[in-house]
Length: 244
Ligand SMILES: [Zn+2]
Image (cartoon, rainbow, N blue to C red):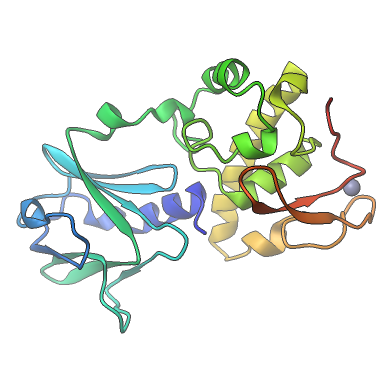
């Protein structure tokens, strides 16, 4: 599944389409696409796992979900769920969810929580974490897109390992300075992830995601579906502390 950095990586590939006028929008998605014909793309932005094409009075959000993908000037054999056509090029999305919004992205989304946005506000995230999510397991909370916008399973697992926190620890039991360190680690690792994408080496460079032993102490990793999120979780029982 694409995580925040994967979407930012796609956005960076689309920079040349900024300022271009769409000749036609197509695809089998149910969204009414007529407003997109013959209008100029003012900007392309991301918000976590969402990609936004920003037009004058509205924008279109594209979410790739579990199986979505994007191709530029290439097509798959199956029909695109959403496509933007230009005189000499096209952008095709497959198995993607699309939604049209009126106004600007900042009217609808809080960019303070987007781990890869320059408006990311660690203090705001810490405060919200301690006020709203205090009774929850940190391993679940990291997947809350309203608080850690853009975090996916790899970022979740690698950040908890780097911060030495067991995912089943409740937020209220984790010392504040540990939470601060975790938030910083999530952001730093997200930028590393973006860098690894350039050479397609995210999985190769992961410390425990997809691995069997801890690189530090060679302990066998615990691998199980854990918490409410039911996502495959990797833990080193020696390195990661369960706060109680
Ligand atoms: Zn370890």
